[in-house]
Length: 215
Ligand code: G
Ligand code: MN
Figure 1 (spheres, protein in one colour):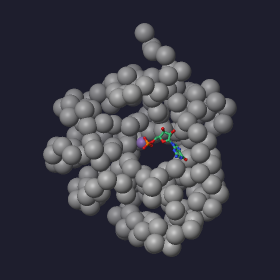
Figure 2 (tube, helix red, strand yellow):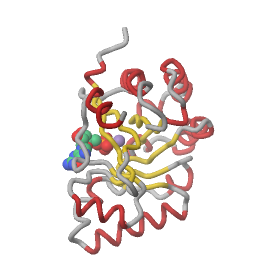
Figure 3 (cartoon, rainbow, N blue to C red):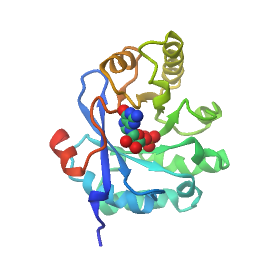
Figure 4 (tube, rainbow, N blue to C red):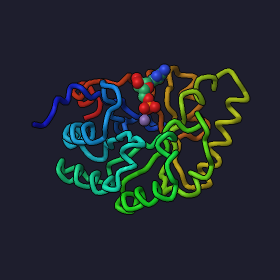
C-alpha cells in the first residue's frame, strides 16, 4: 500500500531574491500526523519534482524520541529514491523539550549526510538560544507571529532585524512564515530573509497543483 497522497498538502516556499519556488513543506490534513506516515507519502510525491526543489518534513517530539529516528529518515528517503541533500526537517520547539544532547545526537548524522535541519516556529514560545548553539541547524523558520506586524510596527521590525543578524552571524538562513501581503514580503526580503512562505504566494495545496506551479 502506498497510501493516499491526496491527504497531504504542499505549501510552496519562495526565494526572497527572485520569487522562484524553492520547494514545499508537506502538511498532513489529519491531526497528530506521524512522520512514519507522512514521510513516505510526501517523499513519493517529491521524487517526481525536478532538482533542486526541496521537500520539508515536520518532525515531532515523538519522532525524535525514537532512537531509530535518523535511520528511519535515511531509509524513507532511500526507498523513495529522494536525495538526502534535498530534504529539510523542521523541528518545533515542543520537540526540543527532550534532552537537548540526545536531540543533537539524533540530528547530527542526518546533517552530516546533507539533510537541512530548520528550527520551526522560531520566535514563538520559549525560544531557548541554547538550541542555536547546540543543534546542527541549517536555518530558522520565523513564526508567523514575528511577521504579522512587520509592516506597521518598528519594534517588530527591529526584532526581525536582530534575529536575521544573529542568524547570519551563525551561518543560518532565515525563512519567514505566514507572509500574507506584499508589504510583509517586501519587509522580510529587505531585512535579509532568504525565503518566505505564506498565503501571499500560496496556501497549502494538493500535489498536482504544486507540480503545476513548480515543475
Ligand atoms: O508551523 P507550520 O509551518 O507547521 O504551520 C503550517 C500551518 O500554517 C498550516 O495549517 C497552514 O495552512 C498555515 N499557514 C500557512 N501559511 C499561512 C499564512 O500565510 N497565514 C496564516 N495565518 N496561516 C498560514
Ligand atoms: Mn513547519
